[in-house]
Length: 84
Image (cartoon, rainbow, N blue to C red; front, top):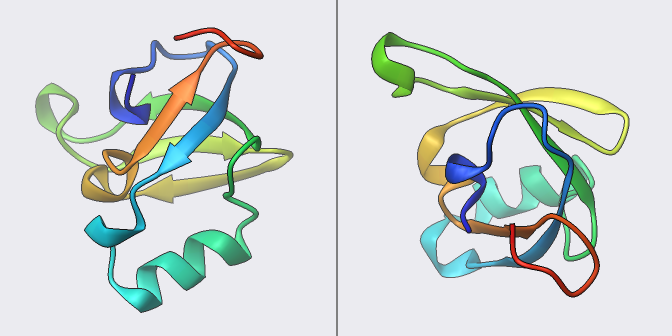
């Protein structure tokens, strides 16, 4: 499941990231935030009308706002070896 599809407040882990959907600068920025395979993530809030705006999410202990197309590049699972 994509990070954009993760229910709010449900902890998950990054399973994979499709870096080809992101520019090199976007990918570098997300890596600097600690986003990598195995990182803990949690969707906190969907912004904008009908949840189409940015996504507030927690990566480890940091909370950031992420554009939806960035979040769509991130596959998550709810537990080790499980799908979300």
